[in-house]
Length: 106
Image (tube, one colour):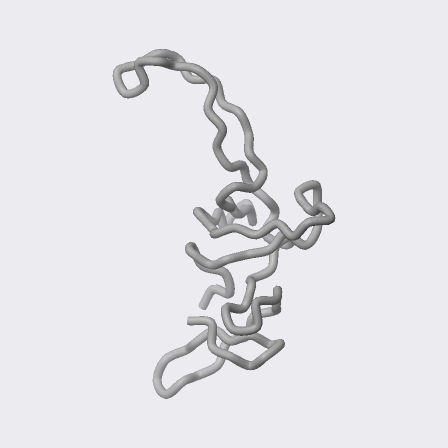
């Protein structure tokens, strides 16, 4: 079972995106082979688009780039703090839980 899933809220803990203010966002995509994660609103990169049928204007768009998987932590929905994630059996199902407050994340 994965400890990080698409749709989780994460906080940047290390790297170039970390600043004095807390930077959080939802996970849009995960590349497990390269160990990179794409987070909504973080690490914005500019891409130049040629005019086409789908984009008749062309121009420059901003889209989220990737951040290393080790630089982000899952934010617990109950305690609202970044936390490590553990896996525990709940009946017959495996569930993720917050190691800080012991609440289930899923």
